[in-house]
Image 1 (cartoon, rainbow, N blue to C red):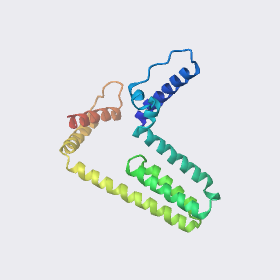
Image 2 (cartoon, one colour):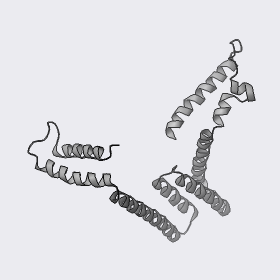
Image 3 (cartoon, one colour):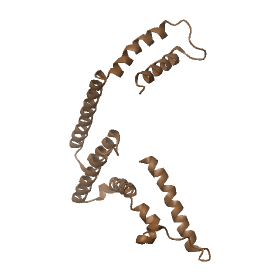
Image 4 (spheres, rainbow, N blue to C red):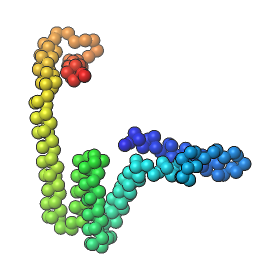
Length: 201
């Protein structure tokens, strides 16, 4: 996503500059309209802005602006409006987190901030924040257990672990280390080589 945006922004700026330059100087020859523009009357800039990626980027910007505005003004909002906006932000957090657009850490921070902005009672605040932390901790534990189970069933990982013990023993027993490296650096280098060998296609 970020790589795509780094390409999108200069393109948008370039197209806008060309349009502005041609409009500002009527004496200059106007470039022929593109086949897309000629066919349906849509400018290249409008076509670019209508792409799903551009729409997704604009939607994400709106979400971030809404969240910033909510946290800045939550104390001054009426209870009903505060609750409705918090619910809307929660749905957006759910959506972006499920799509991988928010890390677990970012989601925890946002959810915790929403609790603090919408729950006045300190005891209830503490309860809800603890529940959020417990939920994410349990999720992280499940993911780690699944990862370890996958590793146990991966012959490449098992081959690496067998070699890892041998390499550690060899490096610890070595009386000379290649010039310029500490024993720890040499061990890291050897283990990296073993990982690359084990996972080579």
